[in-house]
Image (cartoon, rainbow over all chains, first blue to last red; front, side, top):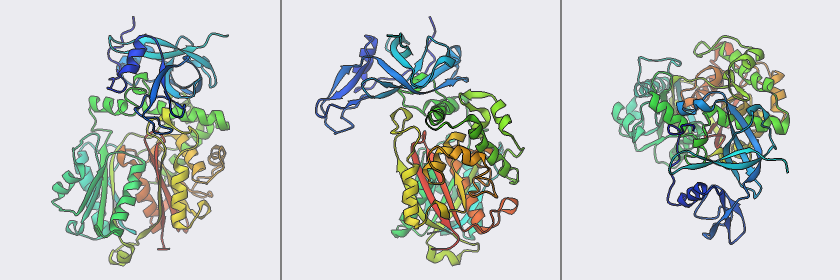
Length: 139
Length: 382
């Protein structure tokens, strides 16, 4: 198994710990405001549309499209060298919010804007399981 | 408000001076240019250094100089912050908080950063939980924008490369620039791919260097030895911090910062004789040229490709060589476009002088196209 230990591991905060817990359960959660209905990511303690404090977790379908991407030819740190060349992308989830991730399990050169992708999960440490994306199976 | 003194230090590789010493060197040169003593400075603005950070940077510089200002702030982000601090300092003078502000900024990213500091700098660019883990380098963050602009408007790698070629042509005429050897579009495209579609020569330099200016009210401009340069307009725009949260990848808050600055100055893009546009990566320049009203959306690539930003073109841009060819020491990077604008408006730029330059625009951005600040400067007070 790939060693992820030297990577920039996220440090969950009090308000995001539940999100990282859902990742450990292989669920990609986002937030929905029970006041105005807006979806948001990353997790916040308020709705960034209407400022209501009533935001609830909902599970994303885990599907989206590539908004933009790059292929990293140089690693950001030594621990990323084994992954070269790797794709960093912005992905717009079906529900609306955009998130950053990697796109794996494909040739980096085959990634394109608009490409449908779906979430998968990679365990980086006992605490951190991180969402990654891969090309969606044709449906 | 008037810029009554301006100066750069040497730039490039300066191993014999620490970032603090370079900041002081910039200050000394600007005070000399303004013809005043340090004791006449009652406002001090600095930015923190990455290579030699202080908890309270401006206070540390004041202590070093043994000056005791009434107004003392340090801004710790690069790009747009450089020019927004000018707006803050000008506001402080206008409000009567202080009279003579020294803005001095320097850093040594070329020779001064330890491996750990460099790593920390890279890792602190993205959102620590939701971006940084995915391993984007700073060029990779900007490559996301470049790719989006290509997709939306058909911008090409050749057009981005033309930005680097334009800057280098100007740097070749600037003895102070770090990189002066002429390059071609092919050279850019053949340079190492860093993060598709950005090649090595699409990326700005890594430098040591510093620059400083002295700011005073326009009423006092005649008290200083050199031609003063007047601040006619200033504006800021802020759209996000992290690129995954951007409202748009292809239209930036330069739109708002530019409009606000134009409105204050009572001028428009057509009135600008020379522009110094933040060029940390080539695609950034294209988006800024469009958002600042110099081109329609999607047309900046063709504009630069057709020599629109050459010294003899309709919009001479980055006449010192910009951060792609003159120098880029990090947070202070945009200061050099300000001192270059002063040099142009004083009409002492020598081989790279823009004929009859009356009005200059300088624009900076920080983060990943996040925070924007625009200044409009003129030879005349209004």
